[in-house]
Length: 147
Image (tube, rainbow, N blue to C red; front, top):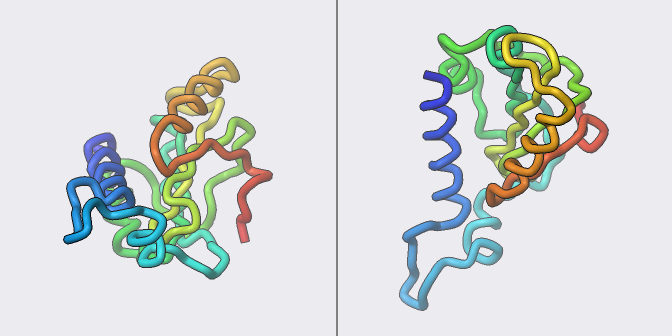
């Protein structure tokens, strides 16, 4: 259930961010000129809430963009993990940030404990996979402002 929701959210985000299939009279929509000004946030991001799935999947999601309301986060986390209005626990492994500096920003943190622990070797591949998805990047806790 979580994978389906996450895949749908990620797919929708990519369509919005990349303007896939969208065209203007002049041609294809340019992300930098046409889309980014609409979704970009100029204020500093704070964690709106989190979904802790460490026990089962060894991940936790920090919802950071302003689009994430309490009801949205709770629905996204329902039947998957434990929602909180606080940040995810500290991760030594790192995480995959999606939608950096936009209204949909979130970070999926990975852990070396829980139901599906990620080893340092696995983290290398997780980072490679994350960095190959458009508009996502692998981050460490030191690179993210948690305030």
